[in-house]
Length: 223
Image 1 (cartoon, rainbow, N blue to C red):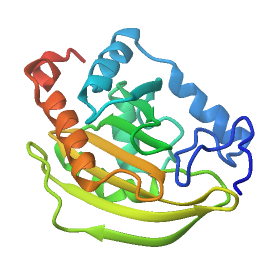
Image 2: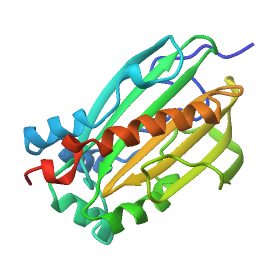
Image 3: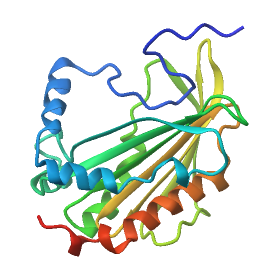
Image 4: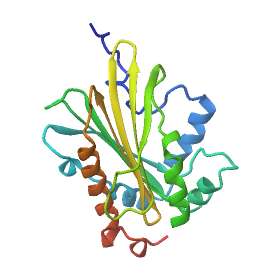
């Protein structure tokens, strides 16, 4: 019998968390990321796919947020410093579905970097950047080398079998890639088998197409 979920606790193993075990100073420094040009914030949000791009039925949007890219990064993190200097925003949107499989969630994220080279380097750092709830243990962790997403350049795909006491086990499957100087992240988590890799690829492909649209190109943005 599973333990009842309390308010503020994750709904399934591996679910990304907003503020897990973060120091007050770190929270304060990240809160500065809410400030910036409203126009750039709006542009960041338009780069995210919506629920219509998800495969199957029953999906609903949970929340959407944005923050200054690179906010809260350490002074020695040169990639983050260069991204922060652009004044642009990263954007995140989360979805959830109960059917046909219970407890599945999707997170999509777009991060604008200062250059294509920085975006390619950032892709390789993404596995360590996903923050999960405390108490979640990773039982298995593997990188896949046969995943392809059209329109992307550098790509990294990995899956983790996670367990949280009282919840059971579940898989999270994630793709990070870049389209030009923008990094996309698609993470699908759920109880049991969670999302199939084919579903993760479909979502990542939809997000890549969105970033490759002419109105999302660098030429369309006035910095």
